[in-house]
Image (cartoon, rainbow, N blue to C red):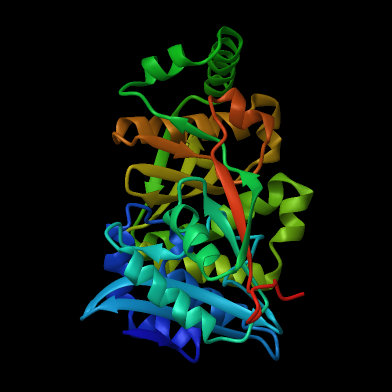
Length: 339
């Protein structure tokens, strides 16, 4: 059965368990696609007046196969989310969802009044990107696929030494030099990682302090409303074991904070901050390298810096992973695109 829900927030909570199981099975357990993320986001950033946020789902009996969180504004339909805080978006899909399941989702979409459907934030190897264009074209809908952004990420080897060897000679030399200089700034160096909800809740005070202290643009980003979202989102996702709030300590003092997400074989670095008094010791890039070293020790396959082509990401071995937008325009009865 295919269903359309009246509000995203209420129905995300209603099907949360099934949605979580589907997200785990999808092989892409990104936090931006999690029901807890959507619930918190909709509570703190409610839909503008006149907009609708809702879910379309497809099931096979009781088993959930597809979840599409959507927002409609006038004649435009998009994946529900915010470009400022969501690095990836997608229709959450079971790997074995067949063409019939996708057709049922398109049937539900066809029953909704819209002219343009914008599926943004799609990872380059997204099932949506592989399957939907062909099925939409068969209905006479036009589909445009455009590069939206890049998320540099590092393919992690089995050991830190192998990782260092994978860097260029210049980047390897620079990283080792910065690590030595940073370690010389204090007598003891420690990385502490918080994962439990209560610990994450308590640690967010220091994280937000370091985040807003490190750069002007980060202070401007962290409005009171955004801070409320960060605190609620991090604690909610920590309840599902998805948060890694890491601090780098020098002589027992937290000098850098990094908010990362556990996505199975991937660690996603979402945001960070540091004490500007240690900028001369490259605390920003060193703290990220130390978190990357932790990811290698945990046996992860990927370290994702998420959106943005900042040079430091490539200095640490990042390679571009593309994010795409599919723009679908539906056809009139005679097959011409709707203007």
